[in-house]
Image (cartoon, rainbow, N blue to C red; front, side, top):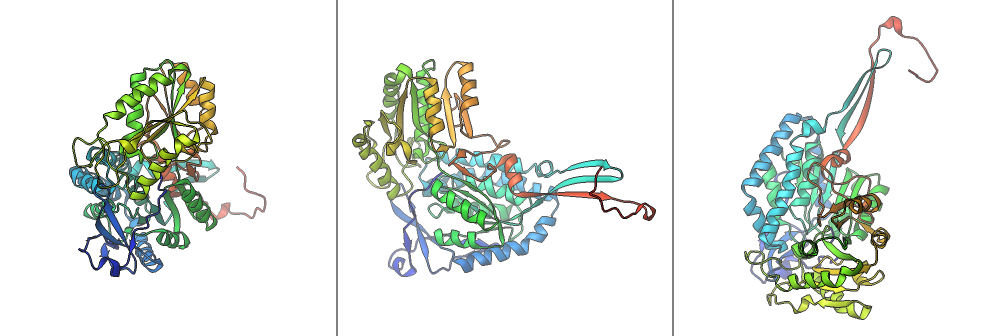
Length: 514
């Protein structure tokens, strides 16, 4: 999940004073809404290019205030019984499910993705809320009676403390629900810093948590940019950091947080390959390529960005993909006829256009140029692009574009396809389309990628498993949501106990044994 374009639309109160006042999107600290700030950011509707909101950017003092609230709430929240924590998750699930359309509308208004895609994001986020409602099962420890004569040993899980969650623009509801629900139900208190590009969905979720009965101070929301993130990373009272974004920033956050002694999981970028074998159904593969490449305008860390055509099928496969692309409807996310919305910012759109413009001079073939697709005149729109004869070393192959661009790489054999993927710096997700079980099993066995699909183009695990890649797609030891997330947000404590009579006591300087 990535964000390559810095959010530079920063305004002072002076600059915005001559225009109609946009919607104010506040911090929420200890349940109170705070809008005062020396610096503010503008929020855009990417379908129109118009400013729709303004939010304060938290400085170090505001971050410290949020941490004060989280620290004060920690003892009481940690002491709350598991059944009561589970009850809050059940109520939260009900609130979100009943008002899903309301939340989806906020996502579409600020991100631009079509409403059905926004609703799907919420559904996937709810999977983790439902998983966390089983906290009694997930937080159970282990016990061994009579480990040695009269000695019992138990292992228990305890919360880490105050933790920070830094979430990306491309899934403004799902990723926060992946992080904060597990952190909270495990007994931690949270500082949440969402993307400044589409923050309203997160404000809605924080208010839903409070409506569900979460005590004030357990979840605190601060908005901001790099300065805000720096304040979070430099704060010694924050014990763990979860992050999703681009690889350069993920690497930096991992390095800085680990050096400061914090627990850290930092999910970075991706360059997901989809292998199409000669025995596959090419119509099925073409449908999957379109769905996985252009859903949410390609702004997904699990989007397919490279089609690996094996053998002699490349020309036919490219023709089938091209045929489907031409009829794609690009438009406002609120239009039921739209299949793909705009990019998140003008800079993101221009970056995608630059990759397409330079592809041919780098030796590739532009089969479909998205800049020529019929799109609305206003807003940050571009059409889907298809680029053939892409090879390693080309920028369109090496870099995470994070937009509606499908590249096609041609290889002669299954072994070459596996090598191509394993040589890539990223290892987030991959897929293979084949009708042969042996080929599928070999792919699963050999591929060096964290999430693998067999005839499934976007292999995002269900909530009972965990999400995460390999190589430059993940910095840290644990994946996100599901079982591994409980490992991240808790520490293990081993207690060895013995109850003996005074007459059994003696001095023994040797190392204890069984």
